[in-house]
Image (cartoon, rainbow, N blue to C red; front, side, top):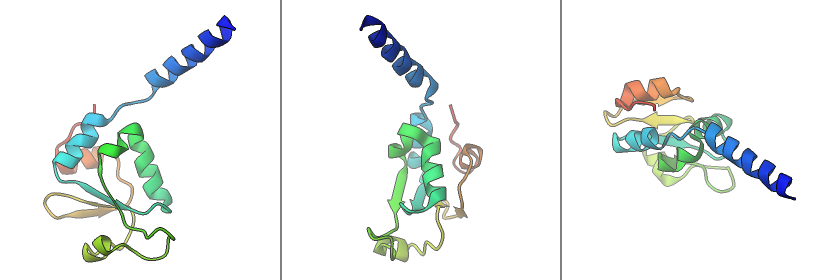
Length: 113
Protein backbone atom coordinates (compact mmCIF):
# COMPACT_ATOMS: atom_id res chain seq x y z
CA UNK A 1 0.00 0.00 0.00
CA UNK A 2 2.72 2.47 0.97
CA UNK A 3 4.67 1.63 -2.17
CA UNK A 4 1.60 2.31 -4.34
CA UNK A 5 1.06 5.67 -2.66
CA UNK A 6 4.72 6.59 -3.16
CA UNK A 7 4.60 5.60 -6.85
CA UNK A 8 1.42 7.58 -7.44
CA UNK A 9 2.90 10.61 -5.68
CA UNK A 10 6.12 10.33 -7.70
CA UNK A 11 4.13 10.15 -10.95
CA UNK A 12 2.14 13.21 -9.90
CA UNK A 13 5.32 15.16 -9.18
CA UNK A 14 6.85 14.08 -12.47
CA UNK A 15 3.79 15.23 -14.39
CA UNK A 16 3.73 18.54 -12.54
CA UNK A 17 7.41 19.16 -13.24
CA UNK A 18 7.22 18.20 -16.89
CA UNK A 19 4.28 20.45 -17.72
CA UNK A 20 5.27 23.92 -18.80
CA UNK A 21 3.43 26.90 -17.44
CA UNK A 22 2.83 29.65 -19.97
CA UNK A 23 0.69 31.86 -17.71
CA UNK A 24 2.90 34.94 -18.11
CA UNK A 25 3.07 34.57 -21.88
CA UNK A 26 -0.67 33.94 -22.26
CA UNK A 27 -1.53 36.88 -20.01
CA UNK A 28 0.88 39.12 -21.91
CA UNK A 29 -0.79 38.19 -25.20
CA UNK A 30 -4.15 39.19 -23.77
CA UNK A 31 -2.77 42.36 -22.17
CA UNK A 32 -1.24 43.33 -25.52
CA UNK A 33 -4.50 42.96 -27.44
CA UNK A 34 -4.11 39.56 -29.09
CA UNK A 35 -7.38 37.71 -29.68
CA UNK A 36 -7.66 34.09 -30.80
CA UNK A 37 -10.80 33.25 -32.81
CA UNK A 38 -11.56 29.57 -33.17
CA UNK A 39 -14.11 26.81 -33.33
CA UNK A 40 -14.46 23.81 -31.04
CA UNK A 41 -14.49 21.40 -34.00
CA UNK A 42 -11.33 22.86 -35.60
CA UNK A 43 -8.31 20.54 -35.20
CA UNK A 44 -5.78 23.36 -35.67
CA UNK A 45 -7.55 25.37 -32.98
CA UNK A 46 -7.32 22.40 -30.65
CA UNK A 47 -3.60 22.08 -31.39
CA UNK A 48 -3.12 25.81 -30.75
CA UNK A 49 -4.93 25.54 -27.41
CA UNK A 50 -2.90 22.47 -26.43
CA UNK A 51 0.33 24.44 -26.97
CA UNK A 52 -0.67 26.64 -24.03
CA UNK A 53 -1.67 23.76 -21.78
CA UNK A 54 -3.36 24.91 -18.59
CA UNK A 55 -2.53 28.54 -19.43
CA UNK A 56 -5.01 28.59 -22.32
CA UNK A 57 -7.67 30.06 -20.06
CA UNK A 58 -5.69 33.31 -19.87
CA UNK A 59 -5.87 33.88 -23.62
CA UNK A 60 -8.55 36.13 -25.08
CA UNK A 61 -10.33 33.31 -26.95
CA UNK A 62 -13.53 33.82 -28.92
CA UNK A 63 -15.57 30.73 -29.84
CA UNK A 64 -17.01 31.30 -33.30
CA UNK A 65 -19.00 28.12 -33.81
CA UNK A 66 -22.59 27.68 -32.83
CA UNK A 67 -23.16 24.72 -30.47
CA UNK A 68 -24.25 22.36 -33.26
CA UNK A 69 -21.15 23.14 -35.31
CA UNK A 70 -23.26 24.64 -38.09
CA UNK A 71 -22.99 28.39 -38.45
CA UNK A 72 -21.06 31.17 -36.84
CA UNK A 73 -21.70 33.40 -33.86
CA UNK A 74 -22.75 37.00 -34.42
CA UNK A 75 -19.54 38.37 -32.90
CA UNK A 76 -17.41 36.42 -35.39
CA UNK A 77 -19.65 37.40 -38.28
CA UNK A 78 -19.28 41.06 -37.34
CA UNK A 79 -15.51 40.61 -37.02
CA UNK A 80 -15.51 39.00 -40.49
CA UNK A 81 -13.69 35.87 -39.31
CA UNK A 82 -13.47 33.51 -42.28
CA UNK A 83 -10.94 30.85 -41.19
CA UNK A 84 -9.85 29.16 -37.99
CA UNK A 85 -7.74 29.74 -36.11
CA UNK A 86 -7.45 33.49 -36.69
CA UNK A 87 -5.33 35.69 -34.46
CA UNK A 88 -6.11 39.40 -34.36
CA UNK A 89 -3.60 41.83 -32.90
CA UNK A 90 -3.80 45.29 -31.31
CA UNK A 91 -2.66 46.95 -34.54
CA UNK A 92 -5.66 45.43 -36.35
CA UNK A 93 -3.60 42.94 -38.32
CA UNK A 94 -4.59 39.29 -38.53
CA UNK A 95 -2.82 36.02 -39.09
CA UNK A 96 -4.66 32.85 -40.00
CA UNK A 97 -3.50 29.42 -38.90
CA UNK A 98 -1.81 27.88 -35.91
CA UNK A 99 0.98 30.24 -34.87
CA UNK A 100 4.22 29.37 -33.13
CA UNK A 101 5.06 31.01 -29.84
CA UNK A 102 7.87 32.78 -31.70
CA UNK A 103 5.42 34.30 -34.20
CA UNK A 104 3.07 35.37 -31.40
CA UNK A 105 6.01 36.85 -29.52
CA UNK A 106 7.13 38.83 -32.55
CA UNK A 107 3.63 40.26 -33.11
CA UNK A 108 3.04 41.22 -29.47
CA UNK A 109 6.45 41.79 -27.90
CA UNK A 110 5.64 39.12 -25.29
CA UNK A 111 8.47 36.81 -24.28
CA UNK A 112 7.99 33.09 -23.84
CA UNK A 113 9.38 31.98 -20.51
